[in-house]
Amino acid sequence: MLEAAELKAVYPLSLADAWIAACAHEQSAMLLHKDPKFNALPLAQEILTLARSRWGGIMPLMETASPIQGKAKKENPKY
Image (cartoon, rainbow, N blue to C red; front, side, top):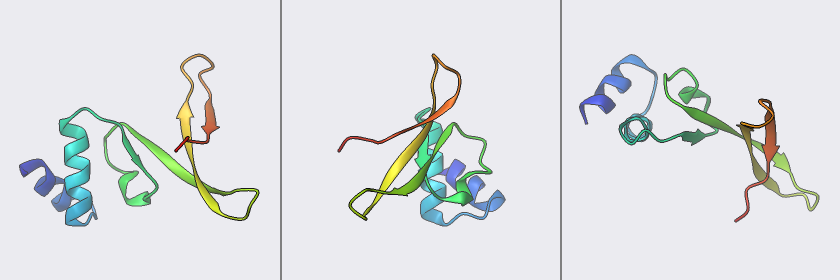
């Protein structure tokens, strides 16, 4: 709880976003998001981008670093 308050005081985050970031940090988890407000945080994070599917809908894409290739690649998550 204290870490969420510190994040909220330092970064322009809502209380809910501060809680999310603090929980991710506490659990040593990757923060997966598409909100540019999280970009400045010193946390491990992956940024979601949106792309149009061939049927016209919008679907999320994840930009991940491939440990084998060492390059960023885009993957469609399976639901």
